[in-house]
Amino acid sequence: MIKVLRCDVDRILPLRAKVLRAGKPVEMAQFEHDRLSTTRHYALLEGELAKGCLTLIQAGLKIDRYVMGVLLAEAGPLLAAARYGLGDVIPAWQLRGMATDDGSQGRGFGSQLIRFAVEEALSEGFSQIYWCNAREKAVPFYERNGWKVISKEFDVPGIGPHFKMILLG
Ligand SMILES: CC(C)(COP(=O)(O)OP(=O)(O)OC[C@H]1O[C@@H](n2cnc3c(N)ncnc32)[C@H](O)[C@@H]1OP(=O)(O)O)[C@@H](O)C(=O)NCCC(=O)NCCS
Picture 1 (cartoon, rainbow, N blue to C red):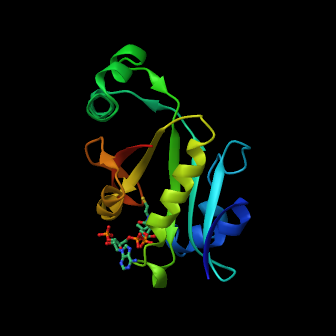
Picture 2: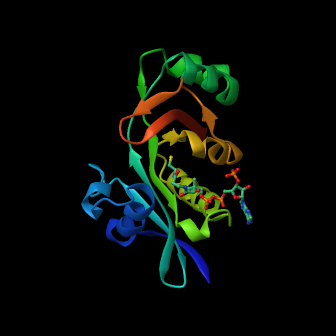
């Protein structure tokens, strides 16, 4: 049976390490914000085994012209123009540690996790804006889940090309 739930970081760390930091010790997969009370971790379980995971961190998003473009197009000129200006940092959730176990990819688990986590985080009222630094290979996956690219390509040393992406919940 498949279920998605909010959980403690220790439940997902081994999976995050296996998929995103392959060959490195589990400690290398920890994020600075993992144990803050505002950080939310989610697991997709098949039986009792974690097959997918993600983490939402409360991290501001700086409004540059790309972000403003999306806000204007998607959230309406009023929201963008009245409340925010270029250079402002807006409250937002950062999605990190998005991973599905190798043998379980392409079964809809990642999409299911994002839907669940975004819906739950929305109810908290902190922010309707989600962003992430997406690996180039994962960009189509995020796009199919409603995310938009909001940066030029940039390199994360040791990992490779990335794009910043945004989702309005
Ligand atoms: C990126 C990643 C998290 C996606 O997770 P996933 O569980 O495979 O995601 P989904 O199954 O929801 O979607 C993946 C594909 O399966 C297909 N799919 C979705 N639901 C499906 C289903 N029920 N049956 C069959 N295929 C399905 C989709 O078309 C999708 O195609 P796309 O990759 O071209 O968008 C996963 O591939 C992964 O962990 N990759 C390695 C680590 C990584 O890059 N993480 C992201 C860091 S930014």
